[in-house]
Amino acid sequence: MLITHDTECALSILVDLLNTAPEVCGDERLPDVAALDAFVVRQEISEIDSLTEDDLRQVQELRSRLREVFWTESTEAAAELVNAIVAAAGTTPRLVNHDHHDWHIHYFAPHVAIAPHLAAELGMALAFILMAGERERLRRCEAPDCARVFVDLSRNRSRRYCDSRTCGNRLHVAAYRARQRSAEAVAPA
Ligand SMILES: [Zn+2]
Ligand SMILES: [Zn+2]
Image 1 (cartoon, protein in one colour):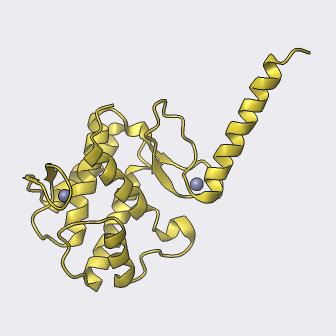
Image 2: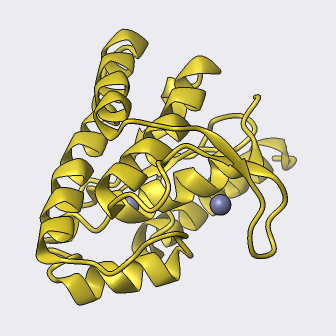
């Protein structure tokens, strides 16, 4: 799979953002500007100036649109959504090296507001996944009581559960049972 380290970083920001939605955990995990600010710090998002209520509302709107991509049934449908998100953001790709990072491309316009910033970066990360023919890696957790999304970057695309504590444990239990079954299958009667 031709997915660069930069794209992987953007995808982890994307998943973090999407899983703050109220549909996921019953309550809004980005309820105020302070929470959005904490998100920016946690994800080390660069070139963000001070945040406002408007920024918060726009990020919440963007989050809903980005989440839709995980519910699409075809690459055509996903591409249409991603193209609309990226076009609305207005991208200006430029090569940069800042802080401790090597040369990489910023797709967002310099010091643009956080919503178009994230739309450009996260939209392009999704575009690279689709371009690689990997839409199937955009997953929704299969645990019945979980609405989290994740990007399955495992070699054989076998991940079914998100890495939240509950679902992660489920994953371990399932793997343990599978190992037990195969051990029983080869054990002499
Ligand atoms: Zn950067
Ligand atoms: Zn889950």
